[in-house]
Image 1 (cartoon, rainbow, N blue to C red):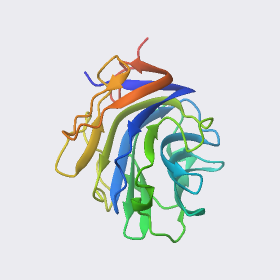
Image 2 (image 1 turned 180 degrees about the horizontal axis):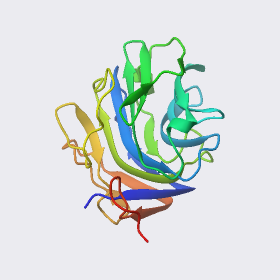
Image 3 (image 1 turned 180 degrees about the vertical axis):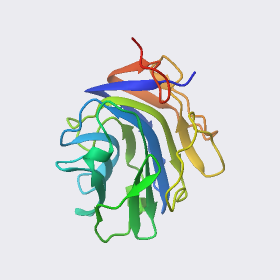
Image 4 (image 1 turned 90 degrees about the vertical axis):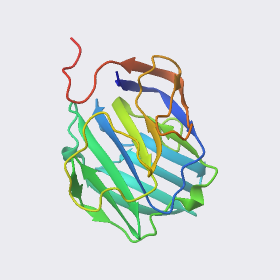
Length: 212
């Protein structure tokens, strides 16, 4: 059955260089153990001036795109993603804006002007559990990561059932079923991911009791 991955700031998951759409949606469930500054959950890094990160900043959860050294970002209050609880997160981007949805509710704390596209990151590697910098890692559980090539959510919605499913707009989908260092892609597009460093498997998942 689908489970989750446990990150304790000692490892990450490398997913390859294939995701750089003009618009898209990145979604997953998280149960953070902490929400300190620079604890990043997903990132794409091409070089020091071009990247994408979602995770916890100094004062907010944020989806940040760095383009030729300039930042575009959407944020929401950290309190909307409670530590020690599962939350469904979706970052929908494109058409000049980005929105962070938490459990189906869009959080528009602030968003600065920008393109909010990822085409400039072609060749950049997607990673889970770490930011653009190798020492800025996530601390907590992560389940069901789905990448889409469309704006899947344009307004508030009821969070999807667990586990997520693939459809024609799904670019990659990882269920974290395997208790191995290689994670299969359930989208049909063959984007396997690989554990790097210390990342543990867990049977815990959203909607199920935590293991005793």
